[in-house]
Image (tube, chains in turn yellow, blue):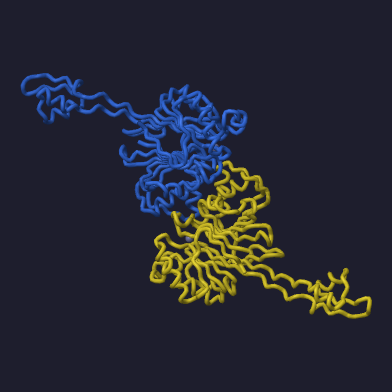
Length: 305
Length: 305
Ligand SMILES: [Zn+2]
Ligand SMILES: [Zn+2]
């Protein structure tokens, strides 16, 4: 899995940073890409990557501010135009359905694939054998959700070399052992499966928060996450402004990462007021509280490992 | 006046051409810019020009296909965010109001300027002392309008040098002469104003058509236009495809320019299937019928003179 940042700016597009969108690439794991948020010109950003719109299986919208949703109608239409036929589901706060349906209806956009729209509430919004996605409400004036993407633990692998070394012959019993069954061999031996299965691999946890003030729900969502993506619209000294506009500072984002015990923090939603050198200052502020931190930029790809 | 092409592609954005938007710059004439159409990422294109969103006074939408309107919500919001306070009017086919109002409502976008939305029909959609704008319905499957922007004739200038040469002394009578009044001088002479006023300057005519098949209404809208902007989604040999998809070929656009007696033709809405060399072929096809033709590209500026 990788996180690919498609837009890392705040509020309005700027030359250096487009408005928000993040791709969670799971091409090896499920042959699919999920998007979190879809600001205007997300499909334009995708043109400069290897992402294929038809691979986008789900889009999770954190909140309905324009810089997080105005790219949706165009992306949905282009995915169809470019031959996407697989179903796509959009998850988002109440109102996302009216926005999408009005845009598609007015523009006579007829999609060549099934589109599902789910207006979410707190709790598990999606789960299958690979992933569970939990949404929690943050503190942003309007409904803003954070999403916790929790990969399921991977079952242990059968240790074939060890079976062979112990002269346990291949056959259907290998499958039984892998499934954890105790088996009896033709030679009378009783085989306990446990020593022949490697430890299960814990699934990765990626938490992506919508715009928010510092809040306890953010800590819950990010609990022991491998990667936490957190907005940092303001620098440390603008704490009052962050509060007034329902945003966070660099330091607040870092504090949330510390409280959650997250392993890595990616700061995004960076205001265009902070140019090159000031960006280093933002990083320093967060680093003073939490050392595994980076500032995202458009097209940054972060491996989840 | 100048036409500045912000997006010249067809259907979906491509690296070389964004989806449709054209700026009619009238900074000297009325301190304002008008837009025709506003595809997704029009505001991003504007970032690469000297245009100021707050100077955008009117937006004329030709039709509601997504590649002509999906940039509206973002542009309207950013104009406000960037300090635009002057009123703005959007003209477009029925449905444009629902699209804009839903997008702004759902996204909690509160504009800091008065926004007017006028759902148009055929006829004069705007007129003041400088400009008259007439809309006419084209042939595109859904309602698609062409707009004829007719600048008012400029009154003749007072020929001050000539007045002086004839020993007509300056004073309030200069104003009377300029207004076309016959005046009597203190020395008894009766002055006919006509010789002292230059010929009126005919206003310029710019016609910008929405997507369309070749049709008589297009010729009417473009009658003696100084510049005709016409789509050319297909090359000459794809006439059947153009007809099936309610579009025009290069040759059809040129024929409309000929029939209308237009002075200059700008082809736009160029499909991304035509790359560099094929573009020259498109130009040749049109040129064979009408010699004053160019193919627009993103950021091309065409002076109206
Ligand atoms: Zn927001
Ligand atoms: Zn169209």
